[in-house]
Image (cartoon, rainbow, N blue to C red; front, top):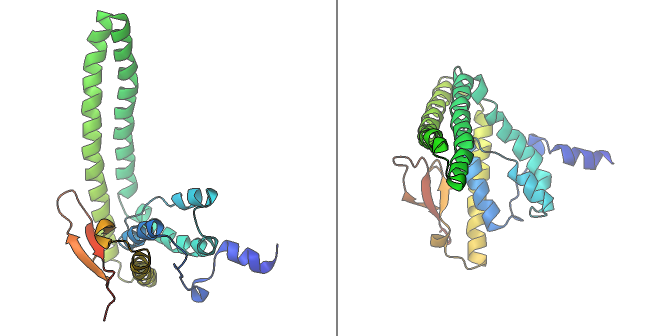
Length: 234
């Protein structure tokens, strides 16, 4: 393997890197818009989807050469969370609650089915209360999951607000890359004659050109829903 190909495989240094989304299809473009913008505010998503797409041949080769560098920047944001006081403890507590609810459901469901098949009353006596407890635990898990996520998000926000300049260059890069993706999505829609109203976009900040806000964050919805403007800007 040549030194050049090895360097590309490891990613392009940021000082030499220029993001080019021109080979991306619309679905992947819109996915990356949500991911890049989410990472800017430390809302970090699983990135293994790209490896799965690559394995299926659903990611352009030129883009995959850029992905190592893009992912390296995203990982810097993901690394912030564990450094924030309290975050790891809260995440562990959330996992314990989720595990207990799943364990109760795993035990109660087979017991309930067994009792229905063989009509054993003593099984009903045990399985029905256990099943109800499991359902309640799952409901509690959903609520606590949302509560812990919100608590973690605010803790990270407060930490970053009190640490001025943290990943400032990387945030600017993500903003630039997200804006480039928005423009690319608009070009693809124009070229393929896709109505942007039928392809709403989810983002977490409204700091971009070429978008029209349809819905603002409200209640359980923590993101904006926007329309990408396909009309040529004057």
